[in-house]
Image (spheres, rainbow, N blue to C red):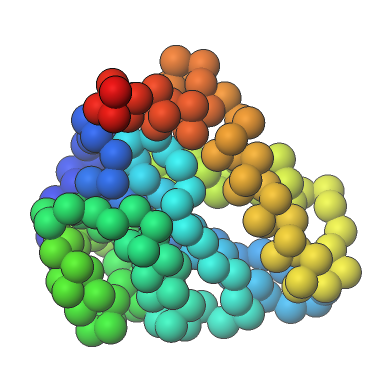
Length: 178
């Protein structure tokens, strides 16, 4: 079990430095389906995600691999999760280590230590899942992809000064590239 290095410091001052992840469960067409997103705490964007019918280590590691490929974080970046079995597995820990990252875990049975991801799950389930019927896992997967695209590019957030995650990121990075 890794120490809680994040310590609820949910507002890093630059992108691609602190990420959070978790797994949430849905009931689709009579079966359990799982979502594993990776969020950049800087702008609350979902930088990668996977959907699967089993909450395996490979499933969560796939979303982390996608996040690393998409963000290319600098040495010293942090990956924070709860204490789920997937995040204690050597494959997960090794992937973080091989890419210069530091692992952080919530304290046992303390959802507030990963509150930003729990909050995202609440929005997702309210805005996209509850009251909807998905006939297949593929249909649900497409809806997740569309929701995350909308969340990143169209859903404004008060914490981001009324901007979407991508607008906030681009506005912040613009002076760096000018």
